[in-house]
Image (tube, rainbow, N blue to C red; front, side):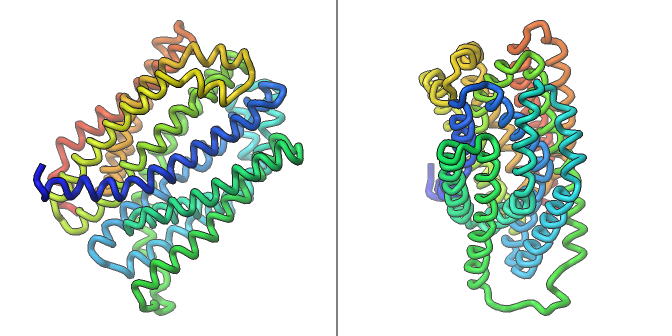
Amino acid sequence: MNRVSSLPFKTVWLMAFPLILSNMSVPLLGMVDTAVVGHLDSAHFLGAVALGALLFSFIFWGFGFLRMGTTGQIAVAFGQQDIRQVRVGLRVGLVLALVIGLGLLLFQVPIALLGFALIDGSAQVEHWGRVYFDVRIWSAPATLMNYVFIGWFIGVLRTRYPLYVLLLSNSVNIILDLWFVWGLDLGVAGVAWASVIADYVGVVLSLLLVRHFLSEFPGEQGLGRWFSLAILKRFLLVNAHLFIRTLCVVFSFAFFANQGAKNGDVILAANAVLLNFQTFMAYALDGFAHAAEGLVGQAFGQKNRVRYIQVVKACFWFGGAFSLVFAIIYVLFGGMIVTLLTGLDDVRQVASEYLVWVAILPILSVWSYLFDGVFIGANRSLEMRNTMLLSTIGFVLVWWLTTSLGNHGLWLALSAFMVLRALSMGWVWLMNEQLWLKEA
């Protein structure tokens, strides 16, 4: 490998490594939540946190476009050295996040009624899930603003900043988890309050980091240039596609959890434990996808196809290698990890029956995550929406064809969903990648 071609590999690694660390702290937090509640005296509490967290995944992931859309547009603007658009793009994203967050607070009662009506859990699980929801919803404005901050940091290629924010907020969350649940005996509500407080801590640190970064580019805009309707319009157009795409992802995982819940609280809890494996792997490998977002966007801003292709190759090489490492770790230590996550013998026993799926999924999933990064950096939100719609239909179809396999059929359908995402996005990319660069 010559010096020219090796440079993107080094750049991708330097970009991705802080993102891997910061991303891994998120599912580690989920594992701590699972472990703290999983060692209480009933599977109802674990199922309640699983369903409550799932509902917030549906709500918050549905607005995940705030991060993705911010990254793509800011990365292109930063590649063009358009600092005004970099500034105004952040303001547009934060205003939109704040409006949506306040709207979620305003409509929290109907959201909760609809959400728990769609998720088929037992009466006890639903009761404690509602306790979790009533507290956690107050984190909505902070959570959505943090999405914008993280997307913006990646777009300006400052990937250490999300690491600082997530390490601080998740450390606060873990400490408060242990104190509220085991120290103050607040149970499910304690887990929720820990998340709320930690999210607002993250907002404060993000504001300080933004101020530090922008101090490198002095010059204040006049009041008339503080906001841009043109940027807002473009932001909304891109993110409308990403919103639908994200809803498809959330629907698929909500469908997965709902079908598992129909098989009883133990299956629901076991699947929740095993999904921690998938979530941990996905967040870690997303470090390379997020690096692709920023670096591909920068290459598009510069219209540099050589750099663009080198970045894509480097991200896929690293992602594939790391997915294999995760698969091996899950094969060797999966049972031990399950034991750490829950002390309930019946949940452990059921979870062990399905460990094979979480060992296979890293190798099947990684390619779709990496293509997400490439498509976001290239601002191809329409194509992301279309391929995700196709993959979601395929997911439901495979589940319907394999219902006789029970929970194994459900895991098979989830695996097929990941493969369909990768194949459909890969085909679209191969057919169109040169045209996209010309249109940038």
